[in-house]
Amino acid sequence: MKIRTKIQSYSSLFLSVMLILLSIIVLLAFLWISVERERDLLEDQASLIAENILSKDLISGDSDLMEPYTPDDGMVRIFGTDGRLVKSFTDEEDLQGLAVKAITEKGFDFTKADGDYVLTYRYPYPEEGKKLGMIEVTQPQDTLLDNLSTLALVLGGASLFVILLSILAGKWLANLILKPISIMSGTMKDIETSGEFKRIPLSDQSKDELQVMGVSFNRMIDRLERNYNQQQQFLSDASHELKTPITVIESYSSLLKRWGMKDEAIQEEAVEAIHHEAIRMKTADGTSAPVGFPNGTLSGYGRKDRTYFVL
Image 1 (tube, rainbow, N blue to C red):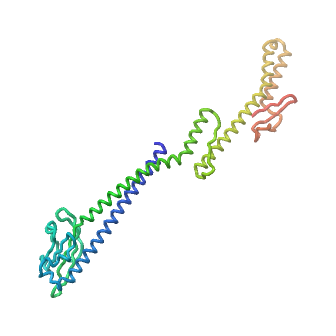
Image 2 (image 1 turned 135 degrees about the horizontal axis):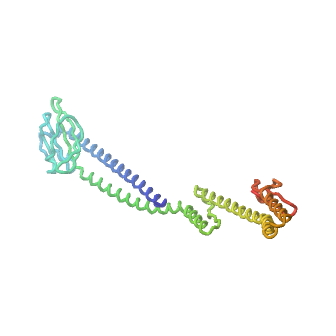
């Protein structure tokens, strides 16, 4: 997998995970805040009923007296101390089948009534003789769930849009980051193909790691080119300096081949000359290095008529 593809994939994946987590957190926060608000409303409604339950004769009077205290599309039920239903009021038939739970203490219940979610709050109230009854206020949560679904759709659509935008941005970012690397790779291919030493064009405005890598690459090319030129110069000098002793050896060996095998004087002279030139090629009379070859990589020795170089 190319680096460009990795950058795009990993950045999009990371952003997708973050958006999903953020959406879940937002939905949970919205649900919690909404439920808390509904609880406060039901609690206030139940407290208002408890304050007026005796003065307004809500228990013994007509059921319509509880209408002003009933939430929109909700239900109010009043139970006695024995758990018996005393009074109820609702305009929604679906809520009439809501199961009656044990009346022990106040609290909230989030349940289902005929397939719909409802929030119920139970609140104890005082009766004659200091005994307690229970006020139950119920309200459907269809609006809350609809708002939650709408928010989920909005978050999902926004997240999808941001992810698609991040893919395009990731492509642009990958091209921006990898441009110097692409140029470097192309320069390396050109060097391999043409054999020429080329440098990467750099911008002075950028001071990042890729800029540092490009500068290091150009310095490496400078050093390689300098070493290559020194090597070529060395080969040229060595070839030039070796021509004379090789010519001498070749001449005397040809002399031996033609006449020296029968003439001891020529044979002795040729062998001595060949041996002398071989010694000169092998050893040095001096230790000084020639100009252009630092650190003593070559040792020079010479005669009056020529100079020899050895490694």
